[in-house]
Image 1 (tube, chains in turn orange, green):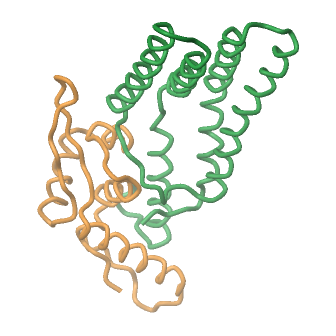
Image 2: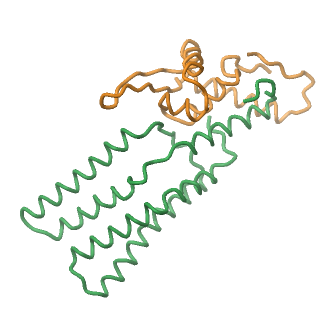
Image 3: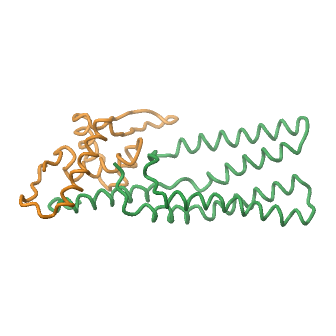
Length: 103
Length: 154
């Protein structure tokens, strides 16, 4: 079974997992929760946005700039498919093909 | 996440770990339940008053409520989806909210017997409810978090 390479990369899987549980999350919250750097989060968030899986919104709260991340409908559907695929694989542990990393 | 360990079972476990860790990172400010209780208390006190005092107290209740909502909006860093809740977590949180009402009700009965002024009664009830909710907020957050174990939110 094929796992979505956009999601399957380890850091992106963490980002998408977090965003799947949220309507919207602030950039700094995702960074702190996942314990990754600004640059790493920026890079992977951009990759998710380019794939159409995430939306990045910049705004202000008072005078402070804030960046918010959210999954698009396409991203949520892709993550749901990804989890379903994982659960199917786990539910069928006798698969003969070794699992291949795709990203 | 281990770069080399990505079996399907490990990936599923990582999704759970990530989501639970994120829940644990989000703490609502300790003042939010006391602020809402204060607004309700002021509203109750306002109903006991008349004229300008009533208008002033009701306006203060609205102000406290508005400030609480604005403050929460400024400090909230993540908005969770409703489906992050499990039935057990929702029941636990509901029981906590009910316990605040019980504490305030019992306080009302206790001070009612002492024949205090109605305004003073409402103020004391509000104060006790606010203190109870603030003191137990982190505890209930931990309990609710524990009740979300094993859930993968898609």
